[in-house]
Length: 316
Ligand code: NAD
Picture 1 (cartoon, rainbow, N blue to C red):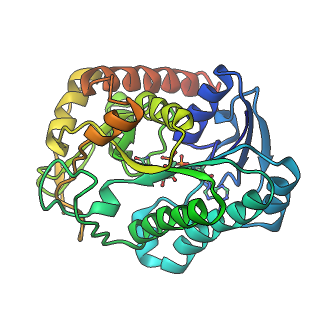
Picture 2: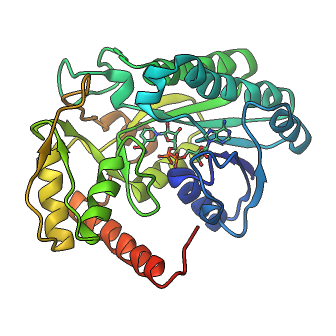
């Protein structure tokens, strides 16, 4: 199939693009390199540096007539969305609509959207948060992702395009961008390997559901095979506190650091954990890589990256 991966110069999108190429698909990547970097785009993908909001991106979609859109391009900084909700909506809703409008007129058959669990469900009423859990986004970022899912349902009804929204938990792994939702893994791992002291904001009891990027890739592949539309959680059902994550990363890096706490971040969500039973039922998907193994792989990758940096062979 001919597949457009937006945000394919980013952390998750680049891993998805790699896997799609391995499965024999033709992959084009559109990314404006705002947080993404060129080296992450797989060599066998065609890279087109464009903003998903631009007329040029819409023209490309119209001209190429892609079969599938895998939409990962986003403004994904929750704090920035609070400071500038219009910018967030412009990129996250406006960008999606721009490529969708061109796509539905030119043969698009399927869309996979990188949505979010934590920011859409908000503070848990019960755990794990499944698809029946109330949707209580508290940030413009969460509101925009929920609106994006609803727009895709509209396109499905209006034009018959199959749409699958994957509500990711906190994704971590090699190539991770430290500014993302699970950026804490990248920040702690890099600091510990460099012999620096990471800071835990607040008392460290806040929890998240950390899902390995390889498992998220598998969910994208399963979504591609699925011949219906739907919304699914992509998480592990397991909660890990920031303190727990710190300890696991300290063990994985063998760093000589103590738990050091700084002031809490105002408005930070206290808990988040996603149930995935419906994802298993419909897509046959479940997480395969546990946190210990995933963190070990991630730390190995950062170790190699630090070695590359120290020898001047930067990957960027
Ligand atoms: P990332 O920042 O590494 O990737 C996002 C990519 O989108 C970057 O390459 C960036 O340059 C590109 N981009 C941003 N604005 C663009 C624009 N206007 N036009 C074209 N390209 C643009 O982040 P990521 O962690 O790989 O996130 C990918 C997707 O997954 C996002 O949609 C994000 O909201 C979603 N998500 C991520 C997590 C997580 O834990 N990382 C959790 C839930 C959802």
